[in-house]
Structures are given as C-alpha cells and as structure tokens.
Image (cartoon, rainbow, N blue to C red):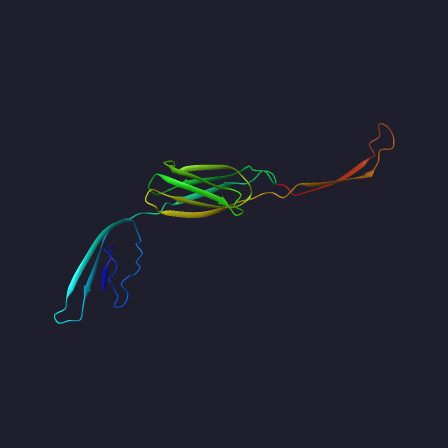
Length: 173
C-alpha cells in the first residue's frame, strides 16, 4: 500500500495498515491516490484516486464582560468568528448546565450573549461545512459585599460631635 495525499508531503507506505491517518495543514482541494501492488512477478498494480475538499475550521475570539455585583446576571460574552464558511451555528453553556443555549444557521460573525451568571462558559461554533471550533471563557464574579458597623462612643449632648462610629467593609470590587 502506498498513499499519496496530494499535499506535497512524502508518501506514506504501509504494508499492514490499509487505513492510515493523515492531517492536512491547510485548506484546499486534494486528490489522494492509493497505489496497491502485490509481490507476484510481474506484480499486479492497481490505483485508486479520490478528490475532496479540506475546509478551514472556524476561528473565534471570545471576550467577556464580568459581573457587576455578586449573584447578578450582568455578565456578557462576545463571540467573534474570524474564519469559516457561513452560515454559523453557535452553542454555549456554563459549567453547571443552568445556561445551555444556541443560535442556529445565522450569517452573523459576531454574537453578543447577555444576561449571564459568573463561572466558566463553553462555546462551540460550527459552519456550513460541518467544521467545529471550541473555546471557553471565565466570567468573574465579585465577592459578596459585607459591612460591619460599631458604635464606639455616643454623642453626649445636643450639638456635640463627640460620637464615633467604626465600620469595616469587605468584598465587592
């Protein structure tokens, strides 16, 4: 068995395997040829050819707008598709599966997903050739704001400014 993948790489020769695996480094139309010979004298030779297209996977860029307050749904993810063949399918979900949504068969290469909780989100984009890209992004959530007040000394007389209140805040951003 001898395989020529038509992409300029060296031929792969296999004497046992009839199902080799080959990775193409770029998109394009390729003709792969399989040469089959036996050990007879003279050898019997047969050739098989097939042509197919290799498509580029959609490339995407994810950007996030983190949550404003602890526990709210102000998070946003912007999905920008840089390459691929329209139309696109967008799928996104968070790590707790409380958000699992999609947008199917759209020509837009830019999708803004809003109203999200904090945590990890997993995004898949596929194009009309069936090529798929996956990525993930984290939406940060500020800590819960806590405040503690204490009255250190009371005002003793009307019009006096001798009282003292102490406070401590933590959390938030």
